Length: 104
Image (cartoon, rainbow, N blue to C red; front, top):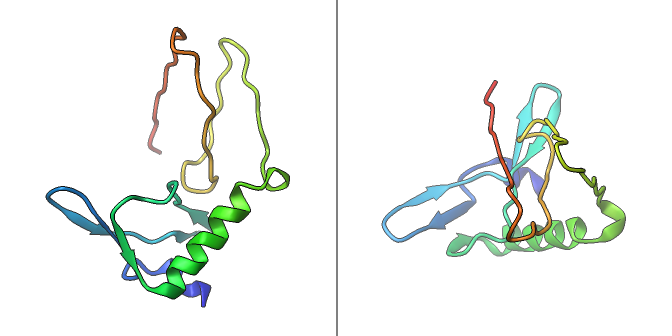
């Protein structure tokens, strides 16, 4: 059943003037990539897909399934945006966060 999450026909996202279809998992060579935003607003899917999304959401928010990296000032991290499910914690409002995206 999880094969549905590799197909972009099963999850539709709607914004004010447009909609798009999105897959959750992608095959990247011999690996599986994931694209999972914290439950997109205004989306439509089947009950089966919704149930799988809820299972993924529960799994990724369990501390034992997370690896937290604490960067110090002037440190950076480079990783594949498609192969690693990632997020960040809050930054202090007075900090100067710099984010660069490189596509290769």
